[in-house]
Image (cartoon, rainbow, N blue to C red; front, side, top):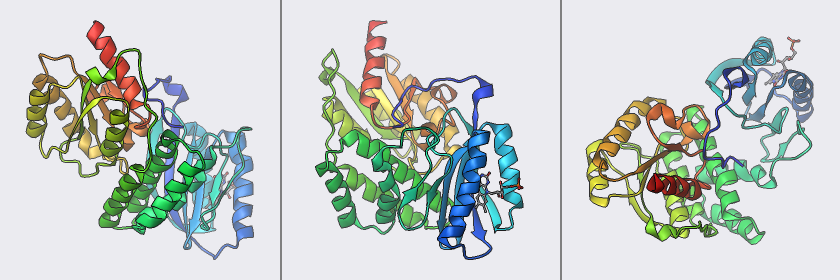
Length: 349
Ligand SMILES: Cc1cc2nc3c(=O)[nH]c(=O)nc-3n(C[C@H](O)[C@H](O)[C@H](O)COP(=O)(O)O)c2cc1C
C-alpha cells in the first residue's frame, strides 16, 4: 500500500524511470494476440528489471513502464519500432524513487474490467486493487449508486477504511486524471468523477488512531492549495483526522492571502495543503511554495508543521524539501499519525 508518508531518499543511481504512453493498434488484436504481446513482453521485462501495466481498450493501448533508465530506454526503443501499433504519444515521463507496479512484469488490463498478470515476485498485489478500474468507470459514469454498492460491499467483506482509501480511491483518482490527460474524458467528467469518489469515501469509517498523547489537543487546518479546485484529498483527510480526534478546520482558499488570514486566525498546530489527487499539477508548484512561505510567516509565533499532498507527491516526483514543507504525504492514509509525530517533536524542541 502506498501509505508511507515520509519519503525515503535513494541514491541517484537507484532512481526509477517511469513512462506512460498511449497508442493505436494497427489491427484488431484478438485476446490471443494480446496475450502473445504480453507473454513476449513479460519475459524480456523480467530480464531487464522492468515492471508495468498494459491496458487495451477501444482499439487503443495505454502502457506504463518503469525500471532503471538505461534498460527502460532499450525496451522503449523496441516498443516504438513495433508495427502492431501507431500514433504513439507519450503522456508522462519522469523519474521516481519507487515503483507503482513493483509486483508485476506486465499487468494486463484487458478491457473487460479484469486484470491478469504475472507476478514478478511471489506475492500478489492486494486483491482490492482489481476494483480500481471498476470504481474509475463508475466514477466517470457518475454512477453513485454503483459506487455505494461497490464500496459498501467491500466494507461488508471486511475491508478496512484505510485499504479502501489507499488502494482503491486514491489510485482511482489518478486513473481519472490519466483518462483526462489521454483525452478520454472532459474536464467536467473528471471533476464529477472526483466528487463521486469523495462521496464514496464518506462511506468508509476510519479506525480511530490514538497516540501516546491525546490528539484532541491538536488542531489542523486542512486546505486545498490556493486556486486548486480538486478537493478529494482534503475531504478524505478531514474524515481521517476527525476519526483520530483532532480539531479540524477545512478551507478552500481562493488566494494565498485568504489562506494566510485563516492561519493567523486559527493558529493551528499543523497545516496540510493539497494539490489535485488526479493530476500532477507541476505548474502549481511555484504557487504552492509561495503559499508555504506565506503560511509560515502568518504562523510565525506558533510552531506549525506544514504538510503537502497530491498526486505529484504521491508519485515521488517532488519532495517536501523542494517546496519548503516539513512533510509530504504519499497517501492520506496514515497522515494523522505522521503529522501528530511531527507536532509532538516540534513541541518538545
Ligand atoms: C502495445 C505493446 C506493448 C509492448 N510492451 C512491451 C514491453 O513491456 N516489454 C517488451 O519487452 N516488449 C514489449 N512489446 C514488444 C516490443 O514492441 C518488441 O516487439 C519486443 O520487445 C521485441 O523487440 P526487438 O525484436 O525489436 O528487440 C510491446 C509491444 C506492443 C505492441
